[in-house]
Length: 355
Image (cartoon, rainbow, N blue to C red; front, top):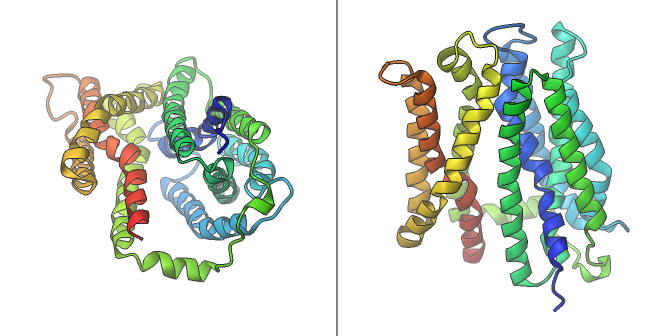
């Protein structure tokens, strides 16, 4: 069995930057960009929320169809690379356009909705085939574990970039368009690296998929453990992204009221949370090894929910500043966030084994 070269493992992992970096930045900043509590309001938060919902809905609907399309594809560029090759440029462009409002009023609302729907569809179009590349790159179980591990590290790096870049660039008084452009460039370059360096197995070596989407859905949801997990995970995702998207408002109104540079502090607080997640990850690993992944997921998700509740009490006491209160809460939230970064893939692998 031929081993996958180290540089191929690294270049595949780089693709995670085109996935985690824009997703994290978009969730944290889209609301305070279009509908800040202070300064120029481009759109109502209700309209922004509706546009985000429609974009997310399109991605959710598109996911199974793109996955099925990718499985059955027999393109000469590779059944996964074809999607990367045809989607990564428009994906980067639409992400950049989100931060470059070209009009106002109802026209901007329509334009934002169009941008978000297009971005979310292209996100599924590119990211799903990218994630499905691992079995196409190697048949070695050891190589696949290494690929997954390398990808996880680059995923964390992507989230760090999504925190550091706004922190630095907003401090230097650069606009959202500049920050969005830098992240769009990262998306473009990181996926270009994957496309140039990735070599899929020849089509003839890949077993064709003869199942339909309907059959795949029925087969998947026959697994009761998966049903329970996916419901819990959907609620967790909702809570996590609600926390992330509302963070800007908490910083703007409570932590840094009247500070025109509050948006750079959003990057600081998310960076603190991510770094504390890295520090606390061994605690989760040790606990899950002793008590099981299910109990670990419940406990550490509960800790994250406590951190979310604690943001309500910022400013109730003046023993320490609101800034320090927020930093301490974000450190604590890092303990809960370990369940988001580590456990889902491990739980899914056990569900697959059970299936």
